[in-house]
Length: 221
Image (tube, rainbow, N blue to C red; front, side, top):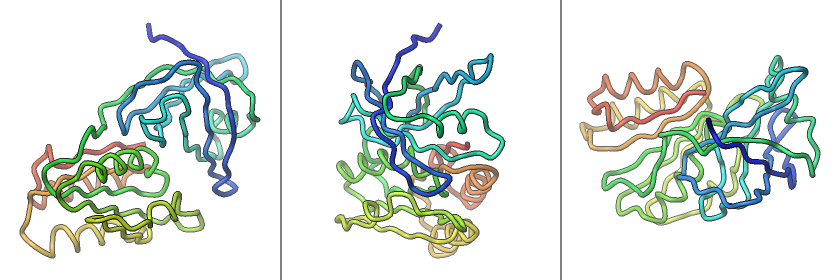
């Protein structure tokens, strides 16, 4: 059985009416890898719902976790989290997940995040920029009517780093244009995360275009 822990909600950062970051203060440090998630145990009615949330902060701050939560219209778990105020207790297990990056690959690295899929990508990108010897690129899809999370931070210049922010509806076409049509190089490493069918669509298109299976890692919410 997974070991349960309890954190305290320290503060809330509003990104927009339907998106926010929750900062959880832990009693003991949580040792995790960039890209991993925790499972929150949420008391809703007579049930306890288990909901996974990617850790959007860095392992270098193991006692304060940042989670990005989107409000799902019919989602009792997200509505519960949106109702919490600082000081509230949140039970969780973890860390979990194999969608991780410990250090930058020796090849060019491309991160593709659609909307709030930036949450696990953010600490992976930080780690890649700290260890990369080859170019690092982020394609961050901009959802219609929603804020681009961490926009100022992710726009900060860094040697060898490039950011593109196409609309979410143009993310597939932008990927195809840059990494399939532009050249015959197929040695890049991809990390893809987002909500819904776009993740598998991007995965399948890159692999069908000549990139090896192991070169396209992904996580779908």
